[in-house]
Length: 322
Image (cartoon, one colour):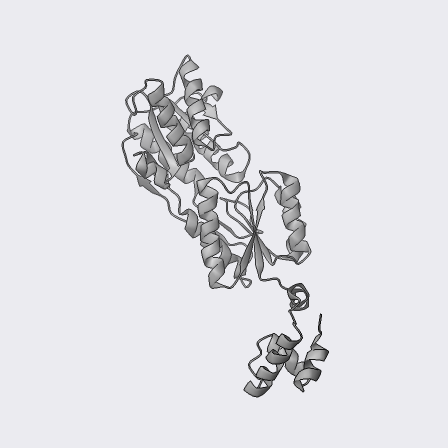
């Protein structure tokens, strides 16, 4: 492939002028620019983008670490990131990890190797101690209700939101409350569990392990929880589900088993995805797209990267399941 010296010779200009044309430098006369472009076309020249990125010390690409893309929460988050990234002429690289630490390390190694300029963790399994080892290689943003002060974080106040949901169910007359989680690990789940334990202690209710259901992400998971609900000797009167997909499964499973919602079992959910409105499920909204968009602008805010915690509001949408 032709190099810039050959282009300069054919166009009758200096190597510096060719470099300026390739990099869209404004201070080149129109005649010289046309001559260089014609020479590039004649010699079939193509820019080595990787070499340019290495020379500039940036790739104009950012990475998103998330467990999977086929869940509405994560796909909506990526949509928010993508819309904001386009405004800044950035490309995004997805690291789908299924919460496998080795895959999250692959993303961090891409940051170390300058293949990406920054990383956004939508959700993570990796410890903060390991993250700290990559501090010098680029910006990292966490989309979680995080108590650490090293990295910027963006989230709703999960403990407060979960407490709000419990208080709402309590006001509706429910003291026997079960809840579902995507996973027990993780800062957001920890906050929710704290809120639940505090509430149960306050109303003098014992914490029943059989009323806590983890690994719940999908409609199928919610339906299976209802099958377990039917087998319980002592049953809760309400469910607080951490996403609308599970809540939809709970509702469908309840109806299939002959239970009436909310008479026999009340259901309150989180996210307020379209499925919640479609199935008339009461849900607490999370501004998912906004979190995604803000994660990009925060990543680019190199002047204020430390000790930045952004907490966004949540809102209850009351429907027929409570």
